[in-house]
Length: 228
Image (tube, rainbow, N blue to C red; front, side):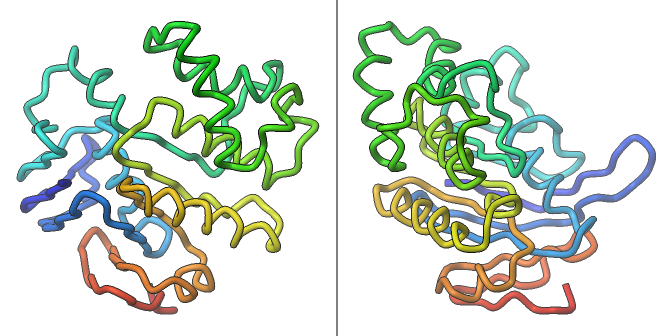
């Protein structure tokens, strides 16, 4: 479970990014986080990634209290997270296989496990036949699928996708979203941050709306309102 309990975040320059956020996300949920640029969505994600610490309140993810967690535990905590970025962040000089394998090598997985798991993950995202290709040889949608495969590499409990459909062809947006839904059905918690109204409206999922640092709406099957 992810639990924000009266969480606030004030940056050193005095900017109040989040104020008194109360939010619970159960294991296995699929949640959209929406809101205008500057609303506080990115800060919410940075707190979850433990790139920033809460200023007030408590933030717990499973057994971890992110406000009091010592720095040496951060790498272990992050192993249960899979992050998908809108700019893909792939290594251009590494093959697709190597990009996915890299995430596993970083945490010391043995080669035997990597050789077995990488093809399985690439099969899930429909890219097993592209394992020798380089990112520049793929379409934007295919690159995002590689990024998703890399996020899955270490079998995380939680997938956080930051604008996962922002830089891809409109025809491929639903393909990426359907992959995230498929992953969610396998028991993963999926959090999708997005500005894309059409994407949110097509899925009857929980929608959390952030506005000027406050959580202003939280409903299942919610709609993306034009005024946020």
